[in-house]
Image (cartoon, rainbow, N blue to C red; front, top):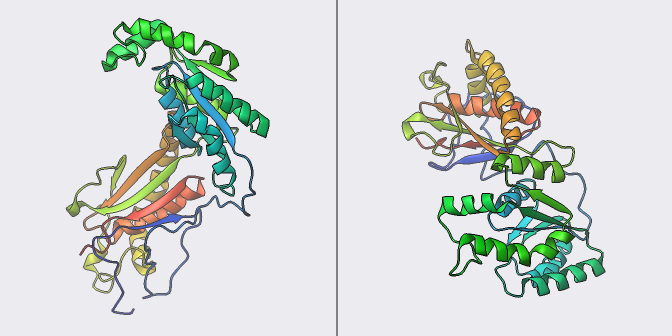
Length: 338
């Protein structure tokens, strides 16, 4: 085994995306991958270049307090390019820019409301322009009962944008009248009076996610307990139940990216059983996250210094998740901090 190995820059997170295949063996003593920033290599590569095309457009509107922001966030998580409060007159320009993006912006969602006084005039002109260009567009209209809207505004202690010096119900009535014609033109009307955030997300997923399950993206992060827990971790697991390669002189200089260190860690009693069982647990958790509309999860894998055990196990765990169709990024937070 070579006695020297180049170490990553101290204090710098090492990150890369992983595929569904576990890393192949390295020659003994060879330097591990040195990842300078994120390497894009997912298990879901898109073959071929995108053809230029007019983007699909969704216009989200409706009553203030009915869930426009939640609907927009749902589309954003499904990969749509979302613009909030874009003046209606600029919608055709946004679509034109998307058409010039060579497929990078294939789906655009725009949130519009009644705060602008020329709202309807500009929106109708824009819709006519889009129709003349043959743009595929849909209008999603969100509404709620007066009682539900009053309750929501009172819970956040904010006035309705149209109530002026009057009451919340006055603002709701004015907005409902202004939106009456647009509601009649809507392709999809969702009444959120009795829906919570998760139920609204489920309705949006049913309309716009197609037959595929909502995407879940996982970050698997190795770290050292002596440097503190990651503040953004959803799940934390401790690898200190495994022997520490630090106390093996010929392994100490290397990291968990080295094949000999990885083999040492994974061949310890209980290591492979842990990997199998924890992967099964994460699969169950991932299914629940998808049902609840959660799109991102960070799994933190810790050991004493974040150099050997947590790094090796993070790599293997990320490969397992990627093989199950989870888009996975590996981050080695503390590797090289010594």
